[in-house]
Amino acid sequence: MSKLTATPGQTVGPFYGYALPYDKDRELLAPGSPGSVRLQGTVYDGAGHAIPDAILEIWQPDSDGNIVRRTGSLVRDGYTFTGFGRSAVGNSGVYTFTTVNPGPTEPGAAAFISVAIFARGLMNRLFTRVYLPENEEALAKDPLLSSLDPERRKTLIARRDADGGLTWDIRLQGEGETVFLDFEGTGTEGAAQ
Amino acid sequence: MPEDLNLETYNADALTEDLSDAVPAAPQTAAPQTAAQTPAPFVETQQDLSAEIKALGEAYAEAVKGGAKRETQPRLDFAPYRSSILRHPTKSLHHADPETIELYSPAFGHQDVHALESDLTIQHNGEPQGERIIVAGRVLDGDGRPVAGQLVEIWQANSSGRYIHKRDQHPAPLDPNFTGVGRCITGPDGSYRFTTIKPGAYPWKNHLNAWRPAHIHFSLFGTEFTQRIVTQMYFPGDQLFPLDPIYQSIVDQDARDRLVADYDHDLTQPEWALGYNWDIVLTGSKRTWTENEALGADGDDHE
Image (cartoon, rainbow over all chains, first blue to last red; front, side, top):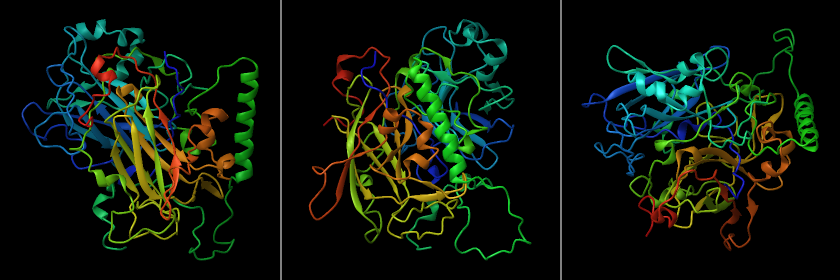
């Protein structure tokens, strides 16, 4: 149990654009390289409008399910897969990553990518997960997914596109609101008031 | 625009039509307009916003008296920050036990960050304008363990309250010698240290005469991805604190205070720079640690 109280978060604000993005931030491996897939989607607000000033981070295992613990996410050497990426959305609210399909970290587990979302107007970062759609048996057994009703569960599962890419939209509010996660279990973390 | 302000570093993707946080309400340089040209729109004043902030604060104080749990984080739903209205989840965050990947963190090291990136005053040919300061402290996890060898990123306005960002239209001068972006890797004891310029307050468009207290944005990683946080550090004694909907989105005074650095004369360097100390506490660790990890052997920064 924690002994110290965590420092509060604050919004990323509107001006992260010259600070957080970096060269090849969204390319966990080079686009077009063997095994690479595109992960893409749009971030929407409660009015259904795309948000043009959000920034996403992903953190994931490699395609074999190994959790890579290697440096080099900020200055990529072109061949080391580090598992971390960052993508600011464009004017139309679309983020894009080039990555690999994550492998299950345990035999039979559902494969997912961990996601953190930051935006102007969003007071604190939000955590969520995006699952690969294929292994239905694993998805059915997943502790998080099975704790959600079917409508909400859908918000965490990516769609596989015809070209092998993944599409996954984020809705911060309203109909189809994405499931966001509280890892603290205290009920004080970003409580909806 | 001076040539050595590297325009390549601007994020064109973030240039958007929605400038509500970014543009001052009434640039000093705007041509005067007659009432006939622009019928006075309904404008929310600081008084309106302060009343809202006060009411929410009082309701919270009452709730605490009634036995409600003290809040430690900002409210996602805090209407006085108008941009949050359509951008906060309306459903409660779903409790989840972190699993596998979430119990580890991306690793950063000296490959990723050059030692000089922690000095924001030496990124150009000349000295930036303003009050030179040192901001230093430690990054700890919720159990008090130092977060060693981990990335800290900062960004900020210059001394006149202007960001190097195309969306910042505040008619205050850019400083050709100040970009306002820094990075460092924490030491074995979780320590970080930046040399920079004290940022100015700046106006924004949340309401009429809205001003942000001076602040530095901080981005932090822990030893687990669940500890990831972006926040803002403030300076002690700022008169704008009670007026600022972003700072006040943390309704608990003790929690708000955790974002305010301490002036630290021991950090101050004679004839050179004033020192501010600010320690950052991440959430608690959920993973069972190995002995090596507990000794702070993460990353490549444990020399």
